[in-house]
Image (tube, rainbow, N blue to C red; front, side, top):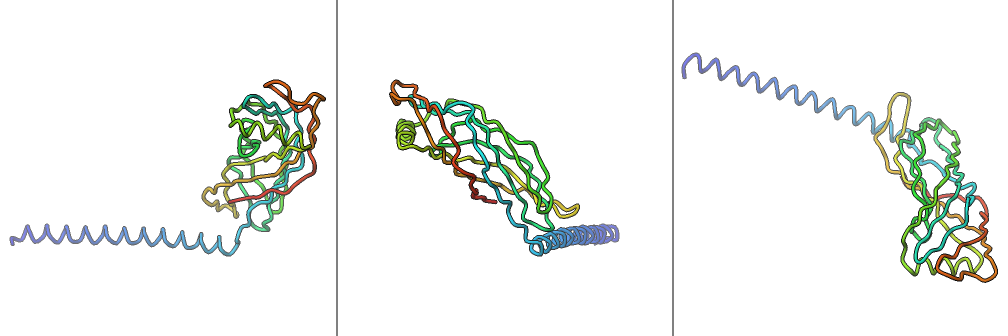
Length: 214
């Protein structure tokens, strides 16, 4: 091997060693940052927020078509951050109402919001009516529930949240909330004649707690 070839070989070997050292240092830095974030997360142990359905007011009667459902309502939801040292960033929240897992309103997006330690936030979105095709048995079940004197709905929230500690912000987590809403029902004498029956009066029974998944 000539002197020039030896010099070129040593240069390539030195370059590979430098690149390997840089890659190792970068990997070590990433691992240290991830470890510190994990330690902070485990030390603080953020708890998921609590949600409560305070009210559900129908702006017009639920419509039971053939076969479709629709409703226009104003929902009052309260959320509480139970953490002493962890804030919550609500990045996206979509609220809608369902009956037997069938949507009866279009989703409404709430504005992004930060919730401080132990803070309570209240939202009162208006959910517009949207005629949603459903299976025939679902529309029939709604009529039967009203005839029995109550309608059981679900107010649902689907969104993304982040935890915040000082200047550190976690990655995004999926949030899903389900709130039972029982309404007492009244309907005109003559029942549900025709293919477009409507419930004339529905009243929210009482505030309820919600199931929360993060």
